Each structure stands twice: as C-alpha cells, then as structure tokens.
Length: 165
Image (tube, rainbow, N blue to C red; front, top):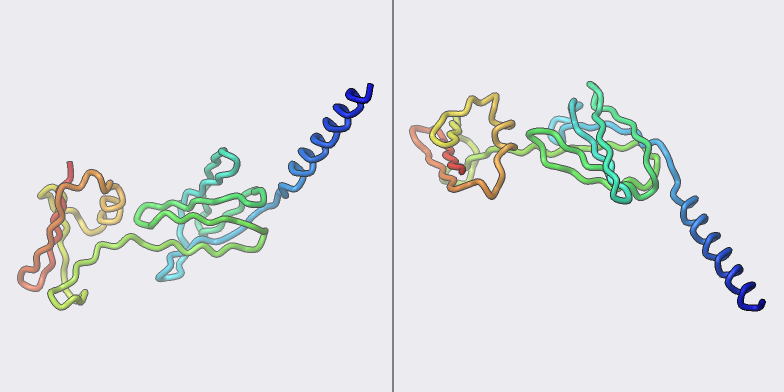
C-alpha cells in the first residue's frame, strides 16, 4: 500500500512539473518592421520563418515592411529576402521589433583598395548579367558551385568574372 501511495505521489508531482513548464511558454503577438540597413527604407516581400520546438511556420511582411506573428517566449525568427543576408533573431518579449536587413553587395576595389570605379560589369559563365539582375543572380549562387572568381580593371571599368558549375 505504501508503494502504491508513493507511486501516485510521484506521478502527481511529475504531472504538476510538466503542466507548469507547459504554461510557462507564454504566447504573445510580435509586431515589427523590416528595413534596409543602409537606407532605412521599408522592405517588401520578406519571408519570415518562425522556428520553435522543431516547427517552422512561414509568413511575409506587408508592403510597408510590417509584420505580426504569434510567438512563444524563446521563439526564433529567420528573415530572408533575395539580395539580403539571412538574419536570425531570437524574440524574448512583445516589444516592437525593428529588423534591419543587410544587403548582399557586389563590390570591386580598385588597385588602391578604394571603390571608386565608375562602372562595373558582372559576367557569369562568360555571359554579361544586366545590372538590374545582379542581386537575384548573386544571391542564387551557392558557394560550393563557384569554380573561379576573377576581377579585372580595364579602362577605368571593373569587370567581375564568376564561373560556376
């Protein structure tokens, strides 16, 4: 009889601990705004991934760069947009979040280490990439696919050659 009472007490204690841990995961709505880190202009079409306890949920910000998402204390958000570095943020409270995404940039330095070239051309596998497509093309290149990268300065113009698999 004593063993039975001890088992019941142990079970009740474990149940109480599990319930208190479950209730301590506070749910709240996180709101924020996503901007370019250099211009502070709002970014649209940023994918937001919520990662918590192995679950992943995706949403996007609106045309003003604003978002809101239901979170649990300790959730991590990943912010992803073409042409920008992936950013991971752990959210600990419901304070308004200002997320500044850092652009991925193609920069060529001249021989003096300055970035003062008037024009830069970007070639991928010997094909000229239009300037308005640089960010999308650059962000789509995986490091493991790069065979070679060369830079050349010719007639005051920088030329970037990238060869991929």
